[in-house]
Length: 101
Image (cartoon, rainbow, N blue to C red; front, side):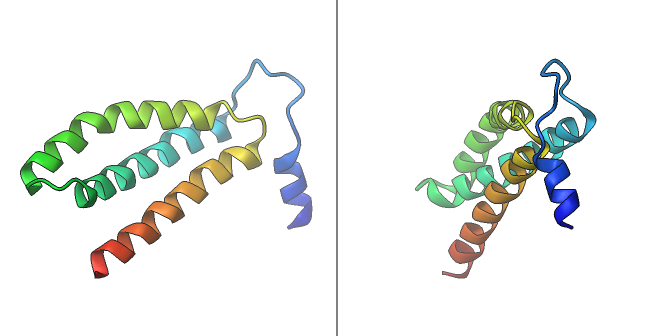
């Protein structure tokens, strides 16, 4: 396991290629973080559910693009993986807490 983590932490020699792993992390990780963030936004905005849903749907594509770019521009595969997992866990835990209140 440590060997695999060290392989993920190694920086690539050429910074011109993004790589398949970072592309997949950026697409699916960005999608998960954007949807969880927009769901959290629906809970936080003090308006009716219909207005909150419309605002979050309009911002979803922008948030997905920004988060995907943020993930894909990471230096190593390990950082890209962390940029997918950590915000997903944070938004997921916040949604669980807000849903149970």
